[in-house]
Picture 1 (cartoon, rainbow, N blue to C red):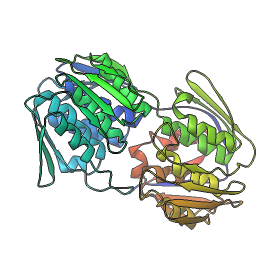
Picture 2: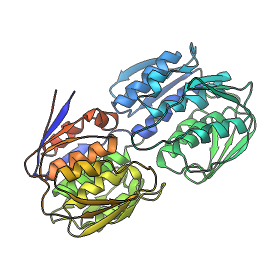
Picture 3: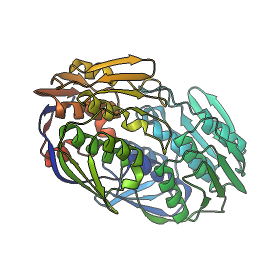
Picture 4: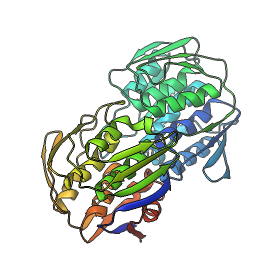
Length: 417
């Protein structure tokens, strides 16, 4: 088991490059199943979830080649299996994203139900409902979704709740369906727009991605393409929060400020000075941060994936803040670990009340999920003394070489076994 050891109390200064977005790369990798031709994807981050998805695609029969760092070439000319086994899906819920492409391309798919998750249940009923509306016959037996469709046809689908992976799955399936599909109450995240741009490069006809109504006109077949994954807005936000909390001056390259307006607004409210250009963001922070209230909600509102990081910031900020989590029912588990570091936090239902204190205390803490891990890293950076973080395999699911990037910014952080 690996751990991170952090000596806190040092401001962050310097320049780093932001990696490609995990949450955009995963569905784009699955889009390779929609064509016999090769899909060349660049700016793919080196993360555990990406490795798991590539292993699943290989198991299905996709040829996987890497021509250089962060570049992958996928060729799904001859699929040998139509099953995503439990062993793959249990470690990465995004494996459900092979359901739509496999069904549209081959007429059949057998995908393990993902089950529960530390931060919430996230059911897949919206995926199933949409595919059934497009003509699929779906049975759930022995923990697997078995879907069959001789041909998929266009349909009007209204999501009961906003679902990112549901929108992505049905958008991919609809590219090869006969007729026109309209997705209403669709998710609007930038990662969905990125997937739509990739599918359009492959020959799909998609309109309205980035709004809550997406229209897809089915085509006979898709072809190969080259596509570059967008920058990771959550990694960007995490480093910006870390600098705001610790103080300092950082410059982030290969990123896009327009992807995280709600986050930048809250950082400005906390006292950070932010400048941005076409592909860079610069943050200066030389004073103690001010507390900021926030409420998570679907894009373009404040992202749930940044909630935990802001909680660590509020722990040492001037004033009292209320953070309300509306997306996942169990996404305040990092509170108990922050309280081990002497944070003053009280939880009432889905809200946390944080009273800022002068200093957190370094101690031994345990990560419970991906973004909670990031919050503990930030807490360790601002704490007095040494912080040891266990179960950092969560971090490796979503942050590429986080200790290396933080070290480049002057942090005292190392990974040990």
